[in-house]
Length: 103
Image 1 (spheres, rainbow, N blue to C red):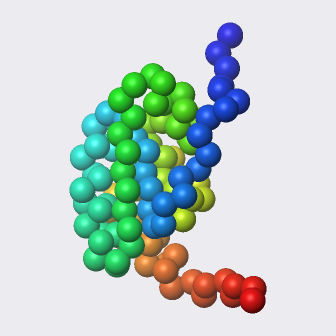
Image 2 (image 1 turned 30 degrees about the vertical axis):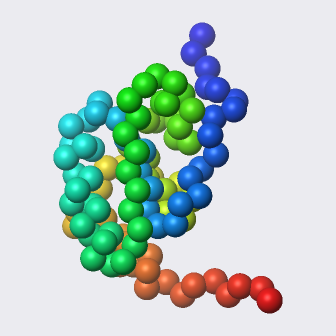
């Protein structure tokens, strides 16, 4: 019976956008450079990690390893966004008021 590892890695701690992906979907691989350009144009750090082994996929912080997008360590979606949709999402996200930090 299939099962999930209970000790997979925790979500990424990098600032900005982090994407985990495999070559299972050619669109996922092909769109990354466009997404990187959008993020860089908005001064948002961008990290992309290709999962190439079974072990890497099993220990990834996503269950569906074809594509997983995180922002500031928080899971956002498995949806492979076009550059236009990603830019719209990122623009709206950056326009939100930032939470106040306790002193």
